[in-house]
Length: 471
Ligand code: MN
Ligand code: MN
Image 1 (cartoon, protein in one colour):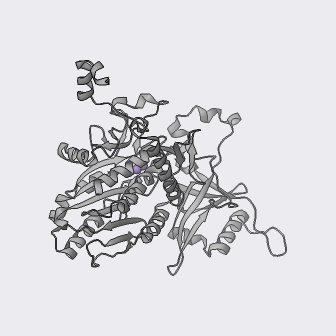
Image 2 (cartoon, helix red, strand yellow; image 1 turned 120 degrees about the vertical axis):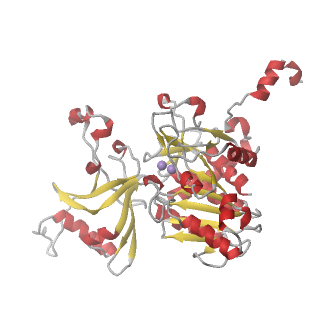
Image 3 (cartoon, rainbow, N blue to C red; image 1 turned 45 degrees about the vertical axis):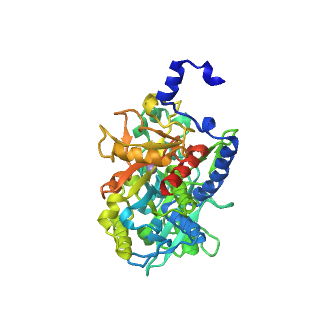
Protein backbone atom coordinates (compact mmCIF):
# COMPACT_ATOMS: atom_id res chain seq x y z
CA UNK A 1 0.00 0.00 0.00
CA UNK A 2 1.53 3.26 -1.16
CA UNK A 3 -0.37 5.29 1.46
CA UNK A 4 1.43 3.60 4.35
CA UNK A 5 4.81 4.66 3.04
CA UNK A 6 3.98 8.37 3.05
CA UNK A 7 4.84 10.58 6.00
CA UNK A 8 2.35 13.00 7.53
CA UNK A 9 4.24 15.87 5.91
CA UNK A 10 4.04 14.26 2.47
CA UNK A 11 0.32 13.62 2.81
CA UNK A 12 -0.31 17.13 4.12
CA UNK A 13 1.69 18.63 1.28
CA UNK A 14 -0.45 16.76 -1.25
CA UNK A 15 -3.59 17.94 0.48
CA UNK A 16 -2.68 21.57 1.00
CA UNK A 17 -0.44 22.59 -1.88
CA UNK A 18 -1.46 23.52 -5.42
CA UNK A 19 0.49 21.80 -8.16
CA UNK A 20 0.03 22.74 -11.77
CA UNK A 21 -0.44 19.62 -13.89
CA UNK A 22 -0.08 19.01 -17.60
CA UNK A 23 -2.50 17.26 -19.91
CA UNK A 24 0.03 14.41 -20.10
CA UNK A 25 -0.26 13.82 -16.34
CA UNK A 26 -4.02 14.12 -16.22
CA UNK A 27 -5.34 12.65 -19.50
CA UNK A 28 -5.13 9.11 -20.85
CA UNK A 29 -3.58 8.35 -24.22
CA UNK A 30 -7.07 7.77 -25.60
CA UNK A 31 -8.13 11.21 -24.38
CA UNK A 32 -5.07 12.79 -25.98
CA UNK A 33 -6.06 11.10 -29.24
CA UNK A 34 -9.51 12.66 -28.86
CA UNK A 35 -7.79 16.03 -28.63
CA UNK A 36 -5.82 15.32 -31.82
CA UNK A 37 -9.03 14.38 -33.59
CA UNK A 38 -10.83 17.47 -32.32
CA UNK A 39 -7.98 19.66 -33.57
CA UNK A 40 -8.57 18.47 -37.15
CA UNK A 41 -11.98 20.14 -37.17
CA UNK A 42 -10.44 23.24 -35.70
CA UNK A 43 -7.64 23.36 -38.29
CA UNK A 44 -10.25 23.29 -41.05
CA UNK A 45 -12.20 26.10 -39.36
CA UNK A 46 -9.02 28.14 -39.05
CA UNK A 47 -7.98 27.61 -42.68
CA UNK A 48 -11.39 28.72 -43.94
CA UNK A 49 -11.61 31.79 -41.71
CA UNK A 50 -8.72 34.12 -42.40
CA UNK A 51 -10.80 37.25 -41.85
CA UNK A 52 -13.79 37.98 -39.63
CA UNK A 53 -16.02 37.96 -42.71
CA UNK A 54 -14.83 34.50 -43.70
CA UNK A 55 -15.19 33.30 -40.10
CA UNK A 56 -18.83 34.45 -40.14
CA UNK A 57 -19.47 32.57 -43.40
CA UNK A 58 -17.76 29.39 -42.10
CA UNK A 59 -19.66 29.66 -38.81
CA UNK A 60 -23.05 30.10 -40.48
CA UNK A 61 -22.40 27.00 -42.59
CA UNK A 62 -21.70 24.98 -39.43
CA UNK A 63 -24.72 26.44 -37.65
CA UNK A 64 -27.09 25.69 -40.53
CA UNK A 65 -25.90 22.07 -40.58
CA UNK A 66 -27.03 21.86 -36.96
CA UNK A 67 -30.46 23.38 -37.43
CA UNK A 68 -29.74 26.99 -36.57
CA UNK A 69 -31.82 29.54 -38.48
CA UNK A 70 -31.27 33.23 -39.12
CA UNK A 71 -32.72 35.60 -36.55
CA UNK A 72 -33.31 39.34 -36.76
CA UNK A 73 -33.87 41.62 -33.79
CA UNK A 74 -37.60 41.51 -32.98
CA UNK A 75 -38.22 37.99 -34.29
CA UNK A 76 -40.20 35.47 -32.25
CA UNK A 77 -38.24 32.70 -30.51
CA UNK A 78 -39.33 29.40 -28.95
CA UNK A 79 -37.79 27.32 -26.13
CA UNK A 80 -35.23 24.96 -27.60
CA UNK A 81 -35.01 27.12 -30.73
CA UNK A 82 -31.60 27.58 -32.35
CA UNK A 83 -30.79 30.90 -34.00
CA UNK A 84 -28.03 33.15 -35.22
CA UNK A 85 -27.86 36.92 -35.62
CA UNK A 86 -25.50 37.99 -38.40
CA UNK A 87 -24.23 41.51 -37.69
CA UNK A 88 -23.08 43.07 -40.97
CA UNK A 89 -21.29 39.90 -42.03
CA UNK A 90 -18.49 40.65 -39.56
CA UNK A 91 -19.82 39.52 -36.18
CA UNK A 92 -22.18 36.70 -35.25
CA UNK A 93 -24.33 35.74 -32.26
CA UNK A 94 -25.30 32.06 -32.20
CA UNK A 95 -27.80 31.13 -29.52
CA UNK A 96 -30.00 28.33 -28.31
CA UNK A 97 -33.07 29.24 -26.26
CA UNK A 98 -33.29 27.32 -23.01
CA UNK A 99 -36.33 25.83 -21.33
CA UNK A 100 -35.82 27.88 -18.15
CA UNK A 101 -36.89 31.53 -17.94
CA UNK A 102 -34.45 34.20 -19.03
CA UNK A 103 -34.98 35.65 -15.56
CA UNK A 104 -32.48 32.93 -14.57
CA UNK A 105 -29.91 34.53 -16.88
CA UNK A 106 -27.93 33.26 -19.86
CA UNK A 107 -24.64 31.49 -20.31
CA UNK A 108 -22.60 33.66 -22.69
CA UNK A 109 -19.30 32.83 -24.33
CA UNK A 110 -17.55 35.57 -26.28
CA UNK A 111 -14.55 35.28 -28.56
CA UNK A 112 -13.31 37.42 -31.44
CA UNK A 113 -12.74 36.51 -35.07
CA UNK A 114 -10.61 39.41 -36.30
CA UNK A 115 -6.82 39.05 -36.26
CA UNK A 116 -3.83 41.31 -36.80
CA UNK A 117 -3.09 41.79 -40.50
CA UNK A 118 -2.33 44.38 -43.17
CA UNK A 119 -5.41 46.20 -44.48
CA UNK A 120 -5.19 47.99 -47.82
CA UNK A 121 -5.41 51.77 -47.74
CA UNK A 122 -8.27 53.50 -49.53
CA UNK A 123 -5.90 54.62 -52.33
CA UNK A 124 -3.56 51.63 -52.27
CA UNK A 125 -2.30 51.11 -55.82
CA UNK A 126 0.87 52.79 -57.10
CA UNK A 127 3.76 52.10 -59.42
CA UNK A 128 7.43 52.71 -58.68
CA UNK A 129 10.56 51.53 -60.47
CA UNK A 130 8.65 49.16 -62.73
CA UNK A 131 6.82 47.47 -59.85
CA UNK A 132 3.16 47.70 -58.88
CA UNK A 133 2.46 47.98 -55.15
CA UNK A 134 -0.50 48.11 -52.80
CA UNK A 135 -0.11 50.36 -49.76
CA UNK A 136 -1.25 48.87 -46.47
CA UNK A 137 -2.27 50.15 -43.06
CA UNK A 138 -1.66 47.52 -40.43
CA UNK A 139 -4.63 46.35 -38.37
CA UNK A 140 -4.06 45.47 -34.71
CA UNK A 141 -0.79 44.96 -32.92
CA UNK A 142 1.88 43.59 -35.20
CA UNK A 143 5.67 43.38 -34.98
CA UNK A 144 6.40 44.91 -38.36
CA UNK A 145 9.64 43.03 -38.97
CA UNK A 146 7.69 39.74 -39.09
CA UNK A 147 5.71 40.63 -42.22
CA UNK A 148 8.29 41.17 -45.02
CA UNK A 149 9.47 38.17 -47.08
CA UNK A 150 6.54 35.92 -46.18
CA UNK A 151 3.89 34.77 -48.65
CA UNK A 152 0.78 36.89 -48.33
CA UNK A 153 -2.72 36.36 -49.68
CA UNK A 154 -5.34 39.00 -50.35
CA UNK A 155 -8.81 38.51 -48.84
CA UNK A 156 -11.80 40.78 -48.66
CA UNK A 157 -14.64 42.54 -50.38
CA UNK A 158 -15.17 45.43 -52.75
CA UNK A 159 -18.51 47.21 -53.04
CA UNK A 160 -19.07 48.50 -56.55
CA UNK A 161 -21.19 51.43 -57.65
CA UNK A 162 -24.84 50.47 -57.19
CA UNK A 163 -24.14 48.30 -54.16
CA UNK A 164 -22.94 44.98 -55.54
CA UNK A 165 -20.23 43.54 -53.29
CA UNK A 166 -17.67 41.16 -54.79
CA UNK A 167 -15.53 38.82 -52.72
CA UNK A 168 -11.83 38.55 -53.41
CA UNK A 169 -9.51 35.76 -52.30
CA UNK A 170 -6.15 35.44 -54.06
CA UNK A 171 -3.23 33.39 -52.83
CA UNK A 172 -4.81 30.39 -51.11
CA UNK A 173 -5.70 27.95 -53.88
CA UNK A 174 -3.17 25.73 -55.61
CA UNK A 175 -1.85 27.63 -58.59
CA UNK A 176 -2.73 31.04 -57.13
CA UNK A 177 -0.05 33.71 -57.09
CA UNK A 178 0.90 35.24 -53.75
CA UNK A 179 2.11 38.71 -52.74
CA UNK A 180 5.15 39.81 -50.76
CA UNK A 181 6.75 42.73 -48.96
CA UNK A 182 10.41 42.81 -49.89
CA UNK A 183 13.29 43.35 -47.46
CA UNK A 184 16.93 44.41 -47.64
CA UNK A 185 19.65 41.88 -48.30
CA UNK A 186 22.08 41.34 -45.38
CA UNK A 187 24.91 42.69 -47.54
CA UNK A 188 23.31 46.15 -47.54
CA UNK A 189 21.41 46.25 -44.24
CA UNK A 190 24.25 47.47 -42.03
CA UNK A 191 22.58 50.79 -41.26
CA UNK A 192 19.15 49.23 -40.82
CA UNK A 193 20.59 46.65 -38.43
CA UNK A 194 21.70 49.42 -36.08
CA UNK A 195 18.15 50.76 -35.67
CA UNK A 196 15.97 49.70 -32.73
CA UNK A 197 13.54 46.94 -33.74
CA UNK A 198 10.53 49.19 -33.25
CA UNK A 199 11.75 51.77 -35.75
CA UNK A 200 13.69 49.65 -38.26
CA UNK A 201 10.45 48.89 -40.13
CA UNK A 202 7.80 51.55 -40.71
CA UNK A 203 4.10 51.20 -41.32
CA UNK A 204 4.47 53.17 -44.56
CA UNK A 205 7.12 50.71 -45.70
CA UNK A 206 4.79 47.72 -45.65
CA UNK A 207 3.89 47.85 -49.35
CA UNK A 208 2.72 44.74 -51.12
CA UNK A 209 4.45 43.79 -54.38
CA UNK A 210 1.65 42.89 -56.81
CA UNK A 211 3.10 42.98 -60.32
CA UNK A 212 5.84 44.05 -62.71
CA UNK A 213 4.59 43.67 -66.28
CA UNK A 214 3.24 46.54 -68.39
CA UNK A 215 -0.08 46.72 -70.17
CA UNK A 216 0.08 45.60 -73.83
CA UNK A 217 -1.98 47.12 -76.60
CA UNK A 218 -3.93 44.82 -78.95
CA UNK A 219 -1.12 44.96 -81.54
CA UNK A 220 1.29 43.36 -79.06
CA UNK A 221 3.24 46.52 -78.26
CA UNK A 222 3.78 47.93 -74.78
CA UNK A 223 1.35 50.76 -74.13
CA UNK A 224 2.68 54.29 -74.31
CA UNK A 225 0.55 55.63 -71.42
CA UNK A 226 2.08 56.46 -68.04
CA UNK A 227 2.02 53.95 -65.19
CA UNK A 228 2.01 50.95 -67.51
CA UNK A 229 2.34 48.35 -64.71
CA UNK A 230 -0.35 49.93 -62.59
CA UNK A 231 -2.61 49.98 -65.66
CA UNK A 232 -1.97 46.30 -66.27
CA UNK A 233 -2.83 45.42 -62.65
CA UNK A 234 -6.00 47.52 -62.76
CA UNK A 235 -6.97 45.94 -66.11
CA UNK A 236 -6.59 42.44 -64.64
CA UNK A 237 -8.65 43.33 -61.57
CA UNK A 238 -11.27 44.90 -63.80
CA UNK A 239 -11.46 41.85 -66.03
CA UNK A 240 -11.83 39.43 -63.12
CA UNK A 241 -13.89 41.45 -60.62
CA UNK A 242 -15.32 44.33 -62.65
CA UNK A 243 -13.77 46.93 -60.37
CA UNK A 244 -12.14 50.29 -61.09
CA UNK A 245 -9.55 52.13 -58.98
CA UNK A 246 -12.11 54.32 -57.19
CA UNK A 247 -13.83 51.16 -55.89
CA UNK A 248 -10.91 50.61 -53.49
CA UNK A 249 -12.50 53.39 -51.43
CA UNK A 250 -15.50 51.12 -50.79
CA UNK A 251 -13.45 48.02 -50.02
CA UNK A 252 -12.13 46.00 -47.11
CA UNK A 253 -9.13 44.14 -48.48
CA UNK A 254 -6.64 42.48 -46.16
CA UNK A 255 -3.23 40.95 -46.72
CA UNK A 256 -2.90 37.88 -44.51
CA UNK A 257 -0.34 35.06 -44.41
CA UNK A 258 -1.03 32.63 -47.26
CA UNK A 259 -1.40 28.92 -46.73
CA UNK A 260 -2.87 26.47 -44.28
CA UNK A 261 -2.24 25.60 -40.65
CA UNK A 262 0.19 22.73 -40.05
CA UNK A 263 1.36 20.42 -37.27
CA UNK A 264 4.52 21.60 -35.52
CA UNK A 265 7.08 19.16 -34.17
CA UNK A 266 7.88 15.50 -34.75
CA UNK A 267 5.12 14.49 -32.33
CA UNK A 268 2.54 16.60 -34.23
CA UNK A 269 1.08 17.86 -30.96
CA UNK A 270 1.37 21.60 -31.56
CA UNK A 271 -0.56 23.36 -34.31
CA UNK A 272 0.90 26.34 -36.12
CA UNK A 273 -1.07 28.77 -38.22
CA UNK A 274 -2.30 32.30 -38.79
CA UNK A 275 -5.14 33.65 -36.65
CA UNK A 276 -5.25 31.31 -33.64
CA UNK A 277 -5.92 34.60 -31.79
CA UNK A 278 -8.79 34.22 -31.45
CA UNK A 279 -10.33 31.47 -33.56
CA UNK A 280 -8.74 28.98 -31.17
CA UNK A 281 -11.33 30.21 -28.65
CA UNK A 282 -14.14 30.88 -31.15
CA UNK A 283 -14.18 27.28 -32.38
CA UNK A 284 -14.43 25.56 -28.96
CA UNK A 285 -17.09 28.07 -27.90
CA UNK A 286 -19.08 27.07 -30.99
CA UNK A 287 -18.62 23.32 -30.63
CA UNK A 288 -19.72 23.58 -26.99
CA UNK A 289 -23.04 24.96 -28.26
CA UNK A 290 -23.97 21.68 -29.91
CA UNK A 291 -22.33 19.55 -27.25
CA UNK A 292 -24.81 20.92 -24.69
CA UNK A 293 -28.13 20.62 -26.53
CA UNK A 294 -29.83 19.18 -23.46
CA UNK A 295 -28.97 22.21 -21.28
CA UNK A 296 -31.91 24.07 -19.71
CA UNK A 297 -30.02 27.36 -20.02
CA UNK A 298 -30.16 29.85 -22.84
CA UNK A 299 -26.66 29.72 -24.30
CA UNK A 300 -25.21 32.51 -26.43
CA UNK A 301 -21.95 32.35 -28.36
CA UNK A 302 -20.70 35.74 -29.52
CA UNK A 303 -17.98 35.91 -32.17
CA UNK A 304 -17.02 39.56 -32.36
CA UNK A 305 -15.06 41.77 -34.72
CA UNK A 306 -12.67 44.66 -33.95
CA UNK A 307 -11.18 43.25 -30.73
CA UNK A 308 -7.69 43.80 -32.07
CA UNK A 309 -8.30 47.53 -32.52
CA UNK A 310 -10.26 48.28 -29.34
CA UNK A 311 -13.73 46.81 -29.96
CA UNK A 312 -15.18 50.08 -31.25
CA UNK A 313 -17.88 50.48 -33.87
CA UNK A 314 -21.05 48.57 -34.73
CA UNK A 315 -19.34 45.17 -35.02
CA UNK A 316 -17.16 45.44 -31.90
CA UNK A 317 -18.07 44.43 -28.35
CA UNK A 318 -18.43 48.04 -27.26
CA UNK A 319 -21.54 48.21 -29.45
CA UNK A 320 -24.83 47.76 -27.59
CA UNK A 321 -26.01 44.96 -29.83
CA UNK A 322 -25.44 42.19 -27.25
CA UNK A 323 -27.56 44.13 -24.79
CA UNK A 324 -30.14 44.79 -27.52
CA UNK A 325 -30.30 41.06 -28.24
CA UNK A 326 -30.84 40.30 -24.54
CA UNK A 327 -33.59 42.96 -24.44
CA UNK A 328 -35.30 41.44 -27.47
CA UNK A 329 -35.09 37.83 -26.27
CA UNK A 330 -36.46 38.84 -22.87
CA UNK A 331 -39.28 40.84 -24.45
CA UNK A 332 -40.13 37.89 -26.70
CA UNK A 333 -40.32 35.47 -23.77
CA UNK A 334 -41.86 37.74 -21.12
CA UNK A 335 -38.71 38.06 -19.02
CA UNK A 336 -37.11 41.14 -17.49
CA UNK A 337 -33.88 41.98 -19.31
CA UNK A 338 -32.31 43.79 -16.32
CA UNK A 339 -32.84 40.70 -14.19
CA UNK A 340 -31.57 38.53 -17.04
CA UNK A 341 -28.31 40.48 -17.29
CA UNK A 342 -27.79 40.42 -13.52
CA UNK A 343 -28.14 36.62 -13.46
CA UNK A 344 -26.12 35.95 -16.61
CA UNK A 345 -22.54 34.71 -16.70
CA UNK A 346 -19.93 35.09 -19.40
CA UNK A 347 -16.72 33.38 -20.33
CA UNK A 348 -14.81 35.97 -22.31
CA UNK A 349 -12.60 33.77 -24.42
CA UNK A 350 -9.31 35.08 -25.67
CA UNK A 351 -5.80 33.72 -25.96
CA UNK A 352 -3.12 34.01 -23.27
CA UNK A 353 0.60 34.52 -23.71
CA UNK A 354 2.10 31.06 -23.31
CA UNK A 355 5.29 30.95 -21.27
CA UNK A 356 8.18 30.82 -23.73
CA UNK A 357 11.43 29.33 -22.37
CA UNK A 358 13.34 31.28 -25.02
CA UNK A 359 12.11 34.56 -23.49
CA UNK A 360 11.72 33.84 -19.77
CA UNK A 361 12.65 37.41 -18.80
CA UNK A 362 9.21 38.84 -19.66
CA UNK A 363 7.23 36.23 -17.71
CA UNK A 364 6.62 35.59 -14.03
CA UNK A 365 6.60 31.84 -14.22
CA UNK A 366 4.46 31.17 -11.15
CA UNK A 367 1.61 33.15 -12.71
CA UNK A 368 2.14 32.34 -16.38
CA UNK A 369 0.08 30.34 -18.83
CA UNK A 370 2.00 27.13 -19.45
CA UNK A 371 1.43 25.44 -22.80
CA UNK A 372 0.00 21.91 -22.33
CA UNK A 373 -1.37 22.72 -18.86
CA UNK A 374 -4.92 23.32 -20.01
CA UNK A 375 -7.29 26.23 -20.52
CA UNK A 376 -6.19 29.48 -18.92
CA UNK A 377 -8.42 31.47 -16.57
CA UNK A 378 -7.48 35.14 -16.14
CA UNK A 379 -9.23 36.74 -13.16
CA UNK A 380 -8.10 40.04 -14.64
CA UNK A 381 -6.04 41.30 -17.57
CA UNK A 382 -5.14 44.97 -18.16
CA UNK A 383 -1.87 46.78 -17.58
CA UNK A 384 -0.16 49.29 -15.31
CA UNK A 385 -1.75 48.21 -12.02
CA UNK A 386 -4.84 46.29 -13.15
CA UNK A 387 -5.85 49.34 -15.18
CA UNK A 388 -8.61 48.98 -17.79
CA UNK A 389 -9.77 45.47 -17.03
CA UNK A 390 -12.61 43.34 -15.78
CA UNK A 391 -11.48 41.90 -12.44
CA UNK A 392 -13.84 39.01 -11.72
CA UNK A 393 -15.07 38.73 -8.12
CA UNK A 394 -13.74 35.97 -5.89
CA UNK A 395 -17.27 34.57 -5.71
CA UNK A 396 -17.61 34.40 -9.48
CA UNK A 397 -14.19 32.79 -9.94
CA UNK A 398 -15.31 30.27 -7.30
CA UNK A 399 -18.50 29.60 -9.21
CA UNK A 400 -16.58 28.98 -12.42
CA UNK A 401 -14.17 26.69 -10.56
CA UNK A 402 -17.12 24.66 -9.29
CA UNK A 403 -18.66 24.51 -12.77
CA UNK A 404 -15.39 23.22 -14.23
CA UNK A 405 -15.09 20.67 -11.41
CA UNK A 406 -12.94 17.71 -12.37
CA UNK A 407 -14.02 17.84 -16.02
CA UNK A 408 -11.60 20.56 -17.08
CA UNK A 409 -7.83 20.93 -16.75
CA UNK A 410 -7.31 24.64 -16.16
CA UNK A 411 -4.70 27.05 -14.86
CA UNK A 412 -4.59 30.74 -13.97
CA UNK A 413 -2.26 33.30 -15.45
CA UNK A 414 -1.38 36.92 -15.98
CA UNK A 415 -0.10 38.37 -19.23
CA UNK A 416 3.63 38.56 -18.49
CA UNK A 417 5.44 40.38 -15.72
CA UNK A 418 3.88 43.41 -14.06
CA UNK A 419 4.99 46.64 -15.78
CA UNK A 420 6.58 44.85 -18.74
CA UNK A 421 3.44 45.32 -20.81
CA UNK A 422 -0.06 43.94 -20.72
CA UNK A 423 -3.22 43.79 -22.72
CA UNK A 424 -6.99 43.71 -22.54
CA UNK A 425 -9.91 41.75 -23.89
CA UNK A 426 -13.63 42.27 -24.49
CA UNK A 427 -14.42 41.06 -20.94
CA UNK A 428 -14.82 44.57 -19.55
CA UNK A 429 -17.39 45.58 -22.16
CA UNK A 430 -19.59 42.63 -21.25
CA UNK A 431 -19.18 42.98 -17.50
CA UNK A 432 -20.03 46.68 -17.83
CA UNK A 433 -23.55 45.48 -18.76
CA UNK A 434 -23.91 43.96 -15.25
CA UNK A 435 -22.91 40.48 -16.43
CA UNK A 436 -20.42 38.48 -14.33
CA UNK A 437 -17.55 37.81 -16.70
CA UNK A 438 -14.18 36.12 -16.58
CA UNK A 439 -11.42 35.67 -19.15
CA UNK A 440 -10.53 32.18 -20.32
CA UNK A 441 -8.51 30.98 -23.28
CA UNK A 442 -5.76 29.01 -24.91
CA UNK A 443 -2.05 29.77 -24.35
CA UNK A 444 -0.33 30.84 -27.57
CA UNK A 445 3.33 31.07 -28.54
CA UNK A 446 4.33 33.94 -30.86
CA UNK A 447 0.97 35.67 -30.37
CA UNK A 448 0.07 38.10 -33.19
CA UNK A 449 2.83 36.71 -35.41
CA UNK A 450 1.96 35.55 -38.94
CA UNK A 451 2.44 31.99 -37.63
CA UNK A 452 1.19 31.39 -34.09
CA UNK A 453 1.51 28.11 -32.19
CA UNK A 454 -0.95 26.36 -29.82
CA UNK A 455 -1.27 22.96 -28.16
CA UNK A 456 -4.02 20.57 -29.22
CA UNK A 457 -4.42 19.56 -25.58
CA UNK A 458 -5.09 23.13 -24.46
CA UNK A 459 -7.55 23.57 -27.32
CA UNK A 460 -9.53 20.51 -26.27
CA UNK A 461 -9.55 21.52 -22.59
CA UNK A 462 -10.98 24.87 -23.69
CA UNK A 463 -13.80 23.05 -25.47
CA UNK A 464 -14.43 21.08 -22.26
CA UNK A 465 -14.47 24.32 -20.26
CA UNK A 466 -17.22 25.76 -22.47
CA UNK A 467 -19.19 22.53 -22.25
CA UNK A 468 -18.97 22.53 -18.44
CA UNK A 469 -20.04 26.19 -18.41
CA UNK A 470 -22.99 25.81 -20.79
CA UNK A 471 -24.53 22.57 -19.58
MN1 MN B 1 -7.35 38.06 -28.86
MN1 MN C 1 -4.93 39.67 -30.10
